[in-house]
Image (tube, rainbow, N blue to C red; front, side, top):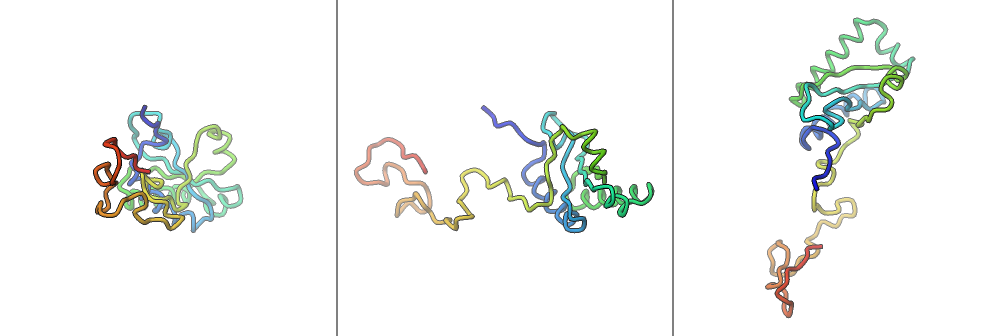
Length: 162
């Protein structure tokens, strides 16, 4: 059974978007979120990649005192993220209050938090423990998993790689 996707972006696209959003997180002290079709994974494709920065009322008023400033910031961040990632990003700054009232029941995927590439990936070492040695490998196997032919006295059945 296939694992259900949490978004429609590839691992590399998600990684690059997360890295590009780190600067926004640092500048505002709030992480932006991947939302919408590209962030939900419930559709076959997406038209654009919706990224939202939600600020409380005071922060929003300081950053966006006029509609023109809000438009300029949204367009500027959209262009920055498109340039950095190659994705068709639609970036908007929203007030937390309205965002929660209108979309609070929908998932939000935080960006700019230092995502690991591929979430650790399949069958990668436990990097956090520092154990990146060839554990589970038998001497003389040149880095490949040991087979029954490599292990003396073993049965001809395949060996499971831990």
